[in-house]
Length: 168
Image (cartoon, rainbow, N blue to C red; front, side):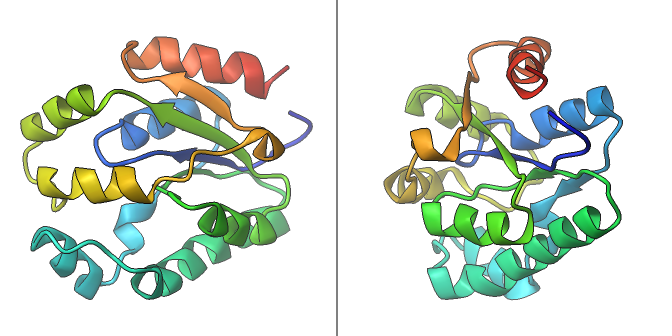
């Protein structure tokens, strides 16, 4: 990685985006943004009620994330963002704001994801939305130069794997 490139830690709910993103942020000395915190109250209420978000629901949210990425680029700083970014179009929107955006895709089995989600306390995203997230997911392809990381590994191992590729 030449200079401070921004990093998107992406994947479906329950994959560990926040944990891995925070650990990458710390390892790289870069700021961290948990994109869930930018959802408007209406989106949070929809998800909490088990209603999947539409592309229209996500538009303003993605714009807010893109603005943060763009601001980091203007400052010459990187930013680590934890964001589902399930569709290629969503990631393209973020790359428009941060052309040097690197992607870490967290991947795991549905059973592992369900298990993790069932153990979470105080999170607005119910386990019932996992199926819609998996159906919506468009995994990054070769053109996106994403790093796939197996979430069956401990966070430290995931971060080490990501860093080896990001810093190569």
